[in-house]
Image: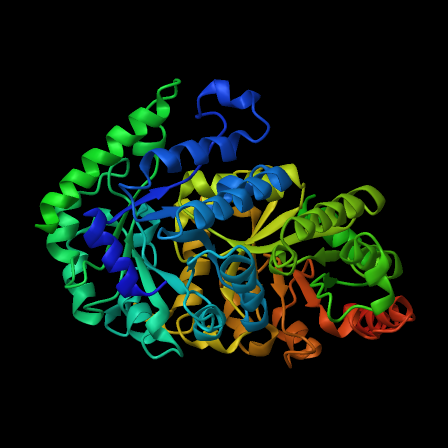
Length: 270
Length: 270
């Protein structure tokens, strides 16, 4: 997928919503536990109920690894289902990987080629040669952690490195990496005032924005400071949508929550 | 396992060697490809041939994820085999994970509890609340990336943050985290002169040291600057040992290479 195709999808659906598929068996409707693959069943129903309101889905790999082999089967079935049934959707493996070159290449193979996600999230701590193997995969995106939505973001990311915050150094340096046109960035919604500064460095790059809703970030604030000409934002919501109800009406309630956000987005896009 | 038990094992085996189980199907002896689970078969033979010379095994998860479900099955079988047959061995899931709190807790469950690794490597970029869920698991260790062995280590890790290199800030700050006694650190062998500085901050913590051999680091240099009273070092070698031969004699040749390193270590421990 190209960023142009992503922007087209956003304009068409009047939405830049990404739904986080962070499935916890303790939180899904209990009647699904009797099915063969409850995680996949849950995802399938959520996807079918929301795919016209969202432009991206983002399974966080931790929630699948926590169930071992079964979890990995659910993850593979989920991405295969999205790619087959809703090929216009942008998919994100929220894996936060990163290792030395030949090892990162293995992760790139796993997520971008074999499972055929459109993108994968990557941690920047190990620098250029840990990220470039992901960037080398054609027509795919690497979403680099810049400024995350958690408290610990202030431990290192906002510290001054040679007179400039680390997250800004990460973004600036990443622009010089090979195939940097395949980069997007994670920027937490809980720090809306930082978007102005970030847009000075990367005016057009897509930003994946967690932290709206459950973590307290404001959609309108993020859009005010972070929206670019090609929209350039994917706003993630996980728990607020997928766990809107734990009863048999969970799909309906998830759709209602997604619709609320989509309508707010439609209003902003005008 | 406690660090005391790890040190006891080191004294007994006269070795602080960690063997990296980074299995690539293109590099293992071709006759193994006919077996049902070539990765596990390879690991089993390597482990049986070297377990008295090594104190730790470290599968890098990327090499397993690259083979999808099959790879995860091989990984689970490998860790189960070590835990059952050689319970004295210290095991490291080289996964370089890290995410917001509730998500890191999922990774901790997967690696430290369900698969029962003794430790897992974790990236520090997201700060305290991304690491503490790993530290919370009793009798287990979190091996934090401090200074890695790759070129990209100089992109951010060695940059000055408020007058002190980022990797030192990471180590210093990590000492204040809850259950910080469960921390170990990754420090690359390619930067032996940095060990002196690191030992000023953490005189006794165990350091997992990649980069000896294939990546050019020197064992004697690392020990000169990095060894603590309780040894405090786990020196990793992967390719140099496990791919010493790609023929039917691969186990024998792997043992020969491990023995060379063990003998060098025995000499140093005197």
